[in-house]
Structure formats: structure tokens, C-alpha cells
Length: 219
Length: 219
DNA sequence: CGATAGGTTGACGGTTCTCAAGGGAGGTGG
DNA sequence: CCACCTCCCTTGAGAACCGTCAACCTATCG
Image (cartoon, rainbow over all chains, first blue to last red; front, side, top):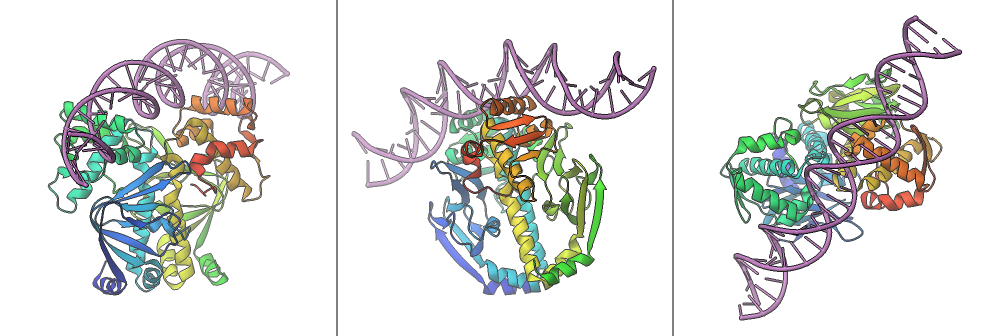
């Protein structure tokens, strides 16, 4: 994004946070007004079905934009919840859309963000084994955290196992067992939520059917 | 979309087809130039993984737009193949993007199309039983075909069972068995690719955990 | 110190996949 | 017109993966 658009963006941005863990950024069915870029921390998006079961749709790290999937219905189709201390920038969507008509690069940037999110669900969409899913998850998280300057393959997961399991469509017990097996086979080191990838190439091999060469930027 | 934009759109549209079954509309990794609206027939989008296994991403009926997920990478991330006789309208994306800066309603329309596609993968994303998946699939197809004036709940599937199975992440055998069971339980009538929904409310009940009240417009 | 939430481990069972074989329907050629 | 082929679909039997249930363990916090 060029300097002009940055300046124009600046006038309609609203800094929010730090939010405490558990705080909602927005809730399902609320009227859509704004998108938000995560500045620090982790945001979880999820829906709750009629039986009260939660379904995790994604985790969102710094630099990522949430709320774009609300444009169509004019209401947020999911909840967004802070997993840890979260700071973000809110952008009024009507205002940013108007601005985009004047700034083709901003328009294109928004198109790209939207387009990217379409491909993103693929991590979940395929029918993959628990091993493949968890391997892909770990690699993708490592990439996205590394992108903001963390040590390249040691990190701390900000979400509980139950959320990881839910996101990957596995039982928490299964996630726990796969973590253990990965550790036994020396693919990773784990202690609680601290993870270190010790054999990235074998992990990539496991995840190859999902990541298909080149790691995507998922939600 | 208002009249002005329709007129402007008209000058940059290219009518394509009728394509014969099996013809590619675009191929994975080809440079992205245009999006396309299906006018008649059915288009299947799919990727092929390194082992040569196909993965069906979606089916696209008349009125639906394909290619939007290529904006981000500037190359098509998937193949689009005609399943039957297909006619479509091609729109140069660079041109339509320029036009969108002059026509806020067109821009918003594009934003909405993109946003809608994000939510669409949910039919597959959840961990649902074979029954739930197939029930949801049948209802959604019925809705989308009914939207273009077909008899409300009798229709002919344009894709083979293997494609349905692949799309739903099930084995073809499983799809066959569920079809049989649905027929035995008088939820539908089937003969080959001709389907008639005879007990829509029980189907909706089965599919409720996926469709979550209000049937979405999926890919 | 006890309570609670989150995580781990084990045993068992179910849904679905795999493997294998057989049955149409439609097209082509004799 | 019929034989034959191929593609698609169906059906059955067995196995595998993962989910469910149940118990226990660990850390954190009041």
C-alpha cells in the first residue's frame, strides 16, 4: 500500500485494546460496520450451532484482517474472541469502501485479502488424517509467527488444545495423542503450549497433501 | 446492479461456449485474467494433488461467478471444467476492477461476491456424518436449481457419483449406500442421476447442523 | 488445601474406507 | 439387431482410524 492511502487510512482507523482474553471483538449476527486488523495477540473466530456446540473457524495473528466475511450478509457470520491480550485497528467498512473507489491500489488490496480468504479453508476442507492436519497446522502457525519476527521454529501456542482440536475437526484426545507421537518420533518438542519444530522436513512431508507446495496463508 | 453498470459491463463481456463436457474453462496455475459467470450448464472446480488425486472444490450453476479466488495469487488456484454443455460470460478482471472504481455499486457487488465465497466452504469444513453431508448437498443443489426456474424439487444431477463423493469427502461407495438408504426411508426418489426430494422437511432436519437455519449459497 | 480447568492416557466401539466383485446403460462395430 | 466394451454405479465383507467414555494427572488460583 502506498503512502497516500496510508495517510488516508490513518484518519479512519480506530485503535482498540488491549483486550483481555475472552473479550469479543464482534459477535455473530451483530450488524456489520467495520473490519479489523490484528496488531498483536491472537483472535479466534467461531460459530455456535443450535445445540450450543462451538465450531472454531480460524485463528488470526498480527497482520491479518478479520470481518471480511461479513460484507455479504451485512451481519457478522461468526464470533471473534481474543485469546490473549489483543490490540487491533478498526476500519469502518463503508468509509474504507468509499476510499477504495478513489484509491485503486486500496481496492485491489481489499480484493486480494478477500480472495485469499476464499482459498484458506482448504486446510480443513480436505479429508486428511489427524497426523496430516496437525503437521500442517504447526507449520502454518510457525510460518505466520515467524513472519512477525519470532524465532523461526520455536513458539508458544496461544490457544488451548480443545480449540486446536475443534479447529482441525478432531477430538481433543486425538490431538493429544498425535502431539505425543510427534514427540516420540522426534518431530517436535512439546511442553504444554510451548512447541519447537525439530524436524521440519519430515513435518512438511506429512503435511504435503494439504499444503501442496508453498505454504498458504490461512485464517 | 443498476442500468448504467449493466451497459458498461456489456462492452467488456465475452460470450463463451457452448463448451462440451470435459472442456476446461481455465487451468490451475494459468495466469489470471478473467472471471466468468456461468450462463447455462454446470462447472466443476478442482485441484489435482501431487499424487494425481483430484479434489473437487465446488460445483457452479448458472448465475454463479468463478475465478474470484485467483485474484490473490494472480494465477488460477484450481481447474474449472465443464460437466455438461456450458455457456458463460468472461469478464476481464483488470477492466472490471477499473470500472468498479467508477461504479461504487459494482465494487460493492464484487466485494459481496467475494465475501460470500469465504463462508461457502463451510458445507465441507465441519465434521459431519455422511447422511448430513448428502442431505445438505441435495437441498442446496435443489435450491440453486430452483432459483433458475426448475421444478422445485425434482432435478437431474449433472455430475457423476464419484464427483459428488469427492466433493463431500466421502468414498463413492458411501455415497451410493446413503442414496440407497435415503430411498429406502422414502426421503428421496432416485434413478441414476434423476433425483426427487419427497420429504424435504426430514432432509432439512438431517442437514440442520450444516445449514444452520437458512440455506446458504454455496460454491 | 481444595477446587477447577486443561491436558493426558487407556479401552472400546462405530462410522467410514478399502478391497473385491458384480450389475446396468449407452455406445460402437460386426 | 446383437455382442461387446467401457464407464458408472452398486453391493458386500473386513479393517482402520478416530470418537466416545472414563479415569487420572498437573498447574494455577483462591
